[in-house]
Length: 453
Image 1 (tube, rainbow, N blue to C red):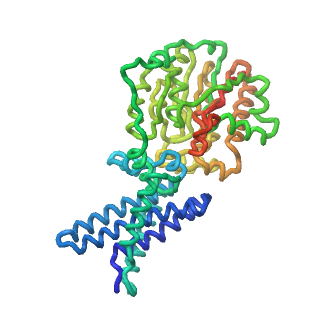
Image 2 (tube, one colour):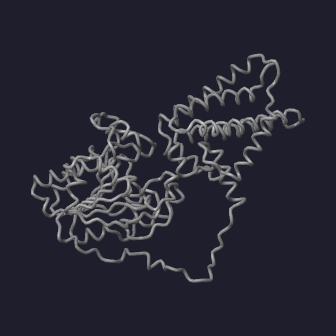
Image 3 (cartoon, rainbow, N blue to C red):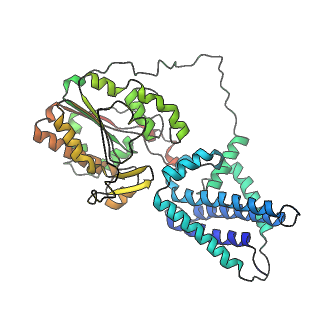
């Protein structure tokens, strides 16, 4: 007998999903990958079993077919995307329960790069082509998808209780449901006064001191770098680079901790002297922080001290909220520069649609020009190197190696122009390591904070 199209789509999707996972997240343990894949196949099988049941009930055939088409793609597309963005998805534990129209619009418009869209469309086309070919073949008997559906349901319910870290959005959905059903509720006693008042954790009104001693204040913000990782990577570097040479002259704060693991809110905490309690990855979260772009910040304090201020980031899109502060200059890659080939001698990647970026050396001439043109200059540079592992893979260099050599180039230039003696360097990080296994370690949140003059 001929295989019905929904059943054929399950088989075809199972093959494509497996190949996609084996190629994209090959670094994971094989059993972990297979369990994540099995969960997705089981979910699709359960949907196919429900479709088969609907076809035997008068009046439900059309509803069952439409429901299967919608729900099957609601499993397939997130599963493909979850694998494509595995590192970020694993960090944030993506949940289908949090998806709405605004989230979908933002994902396809601002996150998924063009190559990702093409890959997604190609994989979907491959699934349907495979399903079409399978549906035209004759099989001895139908596959027992109803039994598979029951197995899938049992597996899903089991995941609600144990919540294993599997590379699948279905597993994250199960974990989210499990927390809502079984996790104890935290009761907040609002009748008692807060332990710390908002005023006590807001230092934005404290005036800046000490900057007037210098003609130039340069703040360099490393990406995803905690003190522990920096110390380990520093040991592998030669003695003639900044992270070694600066030690005798640097004042290092050893108990500086991040409040969360997000670049935007990490920088907002630095620049506004406010406690930033939660990350802002989504548009909804971001909107809660928009007001900070108009509040007094370190930028205002430095301008009051007579400094010309600049925010530098080696990408086309400037970080919202941070970039909205009253900077005198914003130094970034202009739109079209990458496509026009002007950065052909630099490493440039588009890990997300909102991040058309190149390595930080692409901005170095403009950064040095800003310092030369302004006798009193305050520079705040967000490093792009480290935002994506592709930079490390393509170069074979660690983040500490790259950052240190970048600072060497800035120091050499300032020494040549005679400005080094009256320049203060600040080296820090936006946040620590995001991997979930590290989140339970205190060292994950301890950040480097160096002052060097």
